[in-house]
Amino acid sequence: MLTPMARSPRLLGVSIADFPPDLDFSGDLATRIVGVLERVLP
Image (cartoon, rainbow, N blue to C red):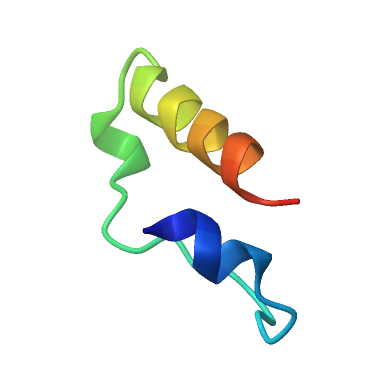
């Protein structure tokens, strides 16, 4: 679902909502989010 939106020339920005970094003690969730964005965004 994210790939077609990310590939659109009309995409102007991306916002990550509802990510509680203060509850991500190990940083694993942040790492997973960055991984998804790296795979999806051109």
